[in-house]
Image (cartoon, rainbow, N blue to C red; front, side):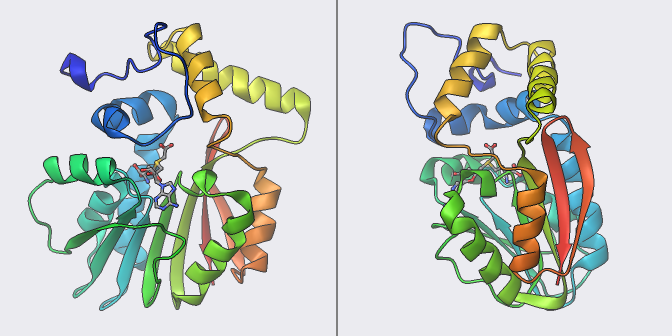
Length: 243
Ligand code: GEK
C-alpha cells in the first residue's frame, strides 16, 4: 500500500487531538483505517453481497446509509441478482464521496447513485435492503429511533435492514475485557498505544455506542418484528432486522 494511504493520523504527537471528522485526511486513508480498526469488517462486507443476492427484490431500491467510500454499495451491486434495482449511496461528508468517486470500479449491472446529504432527511421508499454499516453509532442517540422508524416505513414487507455497530456492555468487567481485546486487535494491526488512546479521545463525543439490548428493543419499537444477531467479534456486532 502507498504510504500516503496508510492511517498514521494519530501517530503525529505534534498535532493536538481534535474531535474526529470524516474529512479529506480521513477519506484518503479510510480503507486502511477501517480494516485495521474494525474486527470482522471484511466478513460483514462479504455477507452484505450474500444477503443482497438473497433478499433484494426486482424493481426495488437499496440504500447504503453512511456509505463512506461505498464498500457496502459495491458489495450489494456485486450480490444483487434481481433486475431493475438501484442502489442509493448516501453520506454527508463531501470528502468521503469525492474519494469514493476517484476510486470507482467499473459499472455493475445495478447502478449506484451517490448522494451527499444527511441520512436523517433522506427519503426512504420501496426499499428491499437497507444497510447501516457502522453509521448509526455516529447519529445522535436522540435521533436514532426516528431514523429507524423512517427506514421501517419505507421498507417493503419482505425487506431487510442490516445494522452493524460498535457496542458497549452494561457489565463493567465484560466491557473492560471487550475493549482490551479490541485494543489487542488494533495493536496486532500496527497501531501503537498512544495512537489507540488519541483516536479514542477524538471519537469520544462523536461515536456513541449502545448495548445490544438497547439496539434490539429500539428496532422492535420502530416496527421490526424480527431481529437477529448474526455476527459478533469483540465489541463489534451486526444485526439483521425484518418487518
Ligand atoms: C462502510 N458504511 O464502509 N448522514 C450521512 N452520513 C453520515 C451521517 C449522517 N448524519 N453521520 C455520519 N455519516 C461504511 C462505513 S463509516 C464508519 C461507515 C466508521 C457517515 C460518515 O461521513 C462516514 O462516512 C460514515 O457515516 C461512517 O461500510 O468510520 O466507523
